[in-house]
Image: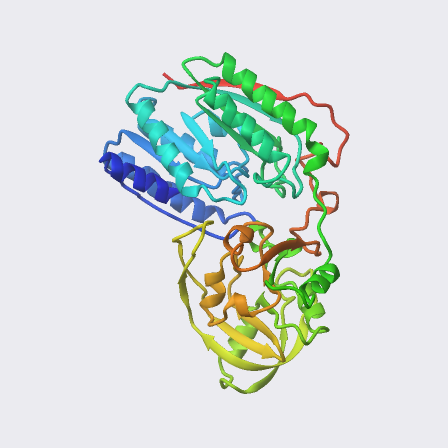
Length: 452
């Protein structure tokens, strides 16, 4: 998203200053001192120099050890520094948890419109232009907020029914002039926070009546489609049978639903690996997060046979597997550039790694977790996905955009902490919400205008 803001600003001849940028994989609560350091750097810039506007590129579903809405707290801190005259806007992932504390200090919020996310740059450009319109007096944002406690569980792709149709209604509301901007937030499904659920934001220009009506209509469509947003996935056994069909011309790219690094998994599940070991003729490729194994293999000779226990050491959900294999490569780091469209152009690195071969099976061991949403991530290790069958990613659906030209993408039903099984999770403050609880559709609404 930040790249889209930068490109749009350069095209408009607007100078940008980026005081700080931080990024991390999904996981548990962030250590609060790390968050405090980020906030301090962000606050320091407007204290030292005057700015016309502040544009924030955030995810929206982070929590710290002390805060459930750190994004809202950051905005409040920035607002206290710059006062009400400076424009503050923000772009979020559509899985953001949007609260009253988020809305109050922020003049305008917009979200990705695609899931899997193929519009990060487009969203950033839209965010910049809306900010510029506010600053130059063409856009007086008045936000209509509608919220209700419901989770989508796996069927929240915007290129499939039902969310594809609901997103089209949001775009139609904009085209017909009912709202300047409409965002649907389907929320990250593992947040144990008060008021978790679906949120619709619709911004009018100087008035809110039509925007509020549009937001209510879209919220009603989400509720009506609630049963259709609970997905079912094929099993691993079914997928392996499909992958081994003699008529198959393209490899199968597998998304490990239960151990998605992009959703906070450790990437150390051995569930799929154990089954691949029982099917030795497959030219399979699977990554495993295992810093201990990487450290041990740093002292082994390339080409040597090794016996080592891999996986199952971080999440506590799986047992390590004993593997006899040949060490074919290792390194301290390998750099690559994602080909996209999800995160296209993003530079990344693998960190310390080792690659093992067991018969036809290649196992990538890394010190740190990765979602492997892009073929270039595998190519960085000297492995071409087009030559493997099947290929396992630690992603639920984002990988499908980037691997579409490589093979047939399928997300499978696997165990793990990121599986869509909310009834098994220890929610304490988020409930009640659908589909665990029997609730009535009684959405909360609010109107927010810019502070004066």
